[in-house]
Length: 278
Image (cartoon, rainbow, N blue to C red):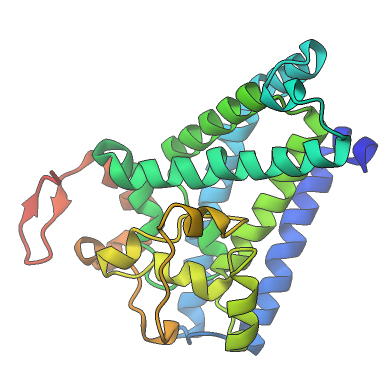
């Protein structure tokens, strides 16, 4: 496994990403949590979200050299908290994935909800009114920079070799697709999964238009972070949730251009007037 993830070709990772997305897309058609308004809209919606996959890939490619070099440096110098603990390899790998999930996903996600100027970029993810597996791909390019920066911090502070970074990124990509997927799991199964990993119903709460629910359930792979830091929230019936943001219900915010420009514009007033977010 070490050799596989240390030398995994980029096209392997792309194939894994596409395979996971296609699998979940098929399952969504069989056991959907909610129904799309019409079939044509489902494909148009996916097209918009898939565009942001390209921008995310471009950002990740631009910073890949930095991530790889940082990871190789920590391994060569044995630098970082995990190296200082002299852990067996399996435990180093487990804690590395946990810490990358905490710093590179949960923590940076929470910060983007709390810091106004960062929220302006993250809100593009929350404007999606019909959440499905493709929503996992809907991130403004500037937000992708935030996430790469957080991953870099995790690698340098913890001490994480390249193969563990590749393993984490593969798990993270699939888990993000899975927990956004518009699938209806039996309640007992979804609840059981949510004790360990982020389940679809658990993450659907995060996409609620009701702010106390929006500001919850930030985790991506492991649900422990939300439970540990008091940000875990459940609702009785996720099928009754309304997705999106009140200010961004206009149909034009399903289009690529307005979504790219939205962080730099005045926040629309749901009542019809534009206003600046405080």
